[in-house]
Image (tube, rainbow, N blue to C red; front, side):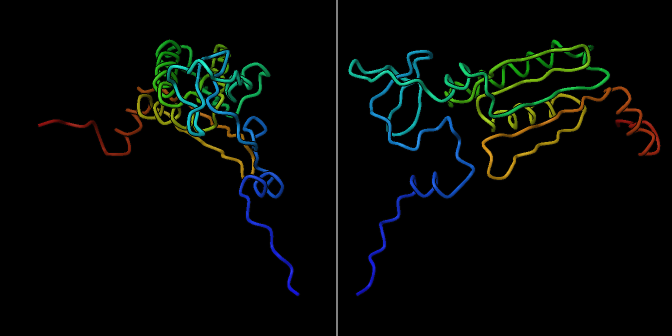
Length: 184
């Protein structure tokens, strides 16, 4: 007589076998329709989205609002450099713009908080992929370097953007290329 193998249940397997489970994401199927009483996001077909909540929607706090209430980020981006204070307003406007644009399509990707200092800022987010989007936008708009760390089997990511002086970067490029660039 052979033993019967239980059917594969990905949700059960993920939570019982893998240590990378995000404690802010439910392993159980949530009731649908559901609406977050804090932000208004609606759980529709297993995905949180921005839409009008049906009248019969159950009140269920979304993972982003739970993280905000607990003050626990999924991603942290540090922006620093000796020239941060010169570009701080521009940097923060770009960070807010990217976060707002992303949140329109992804309700769970939001800024949790921004802490600023003279030579830098720390941006905490409710989604670990949002820091990559913000970091990429900073790298395209400002001279500097971006380091991303997505930790294996962890629902957390860390990134650092090191802002360099644009004028110094131009002079270094000039020096390395053998002189100033001339346009015909």
